[in-house]
Length: 315
Image 1: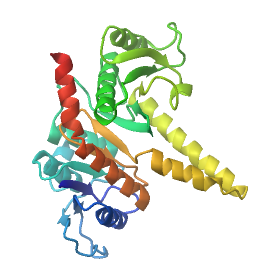
Image 2: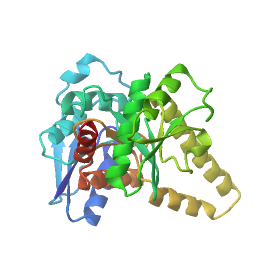
Image 3: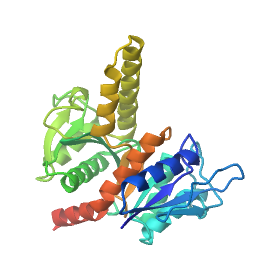
């Protein structure tokens, strides 16, 4: 049985939405158990008892706007710290959180450790699921030297190999595909990737190639990746609003496509465990999607699969 550790305190809409999402998942998946880590509150209505649902009270919560400081590593009774500890101690198969991204990355590195000492963890977001296509990094790292971008390419390629039968083909996001374009960091990353036989590297990718084309792992630094993701989500919401204002029924199609073709949230790879980061503004449907995403990567034992692929490449 797969056991999900759900941090219920990170989302903008509060733990009630996390409770509702967990119960919906349990009603659909008989082989799933969920441990919910939450902070008790006198006004909080707890979910009805369920045989495969465990409520684990914690006395600390990491706020979404908190800065990452060394004191974070001492907050052992926070919901996120406890959820990650359950993963480290193999009491759960995957952690799902909607909380503070910086805190999640820092605590994941601290509690779970890195798969490789010089391989920085990265957030991967699937742009399509069929065929699999992803963007890496989405904000786990902001200042990225060329060697870090090369590592993102390796993690992204291993991710695609673990979760699909489509061969990974790397593109490095740039302002153009010409060799003369790009910063010194991008040009050095291009040189490093070109010198390797794995992963297969197809050169620079422009923004127009994010959602279609032969390059299915698009690599960039976390600041660019986060901006791309937020801009894409904002454009989708804008278009839906415009179509609805015209009285069209088309939004139902767009929303259906978005729900079925994309897993909700992003996956943090490069640490010693399976971890999904959902959007802070996740509603019930998005939380269900994030938990389902966590179930998918737990079934595939993604962390072990990536570790094995990296070992094979090193050998």
